[in-house]
Image 1 (cartoon, rainbow, N blue to C red):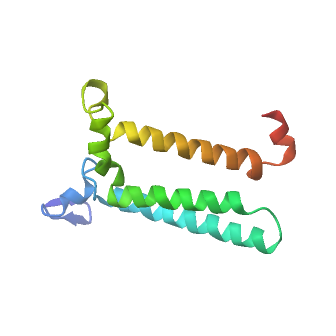
Image 2 (cartoon, rainbow, N blue to C red):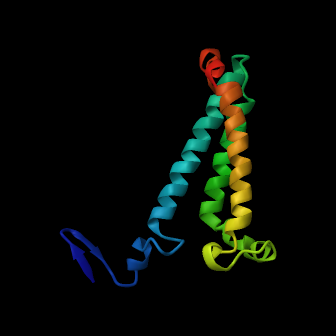
Length: 130
């Protein structure tokens, strides 16, 4: 048993604090924060829709953040290993084969979020400087 001042953690539960394992407490904390962020973005989209203001970018961002939290929770990216091997990953620098399809998905998310930010989130004075 590990004792740190008043906290006692048994040896069976210590894996929950291991950052190398997927189902640890830090992963669940991150998923919780991302779900709360997605819900906040969704409510912001609803308020904007009720006020007759453009809301689709807010909704798209809420969906994107929710999908990221889903990936963090159930490790969808690691299930792309076979596709990554077919695309040439799994050796050398790209030791984890899911990195190649993951990079493609990340690039798509960056484009979607970038367009949403450029078109809808920023005031016109900031958009002109881009």
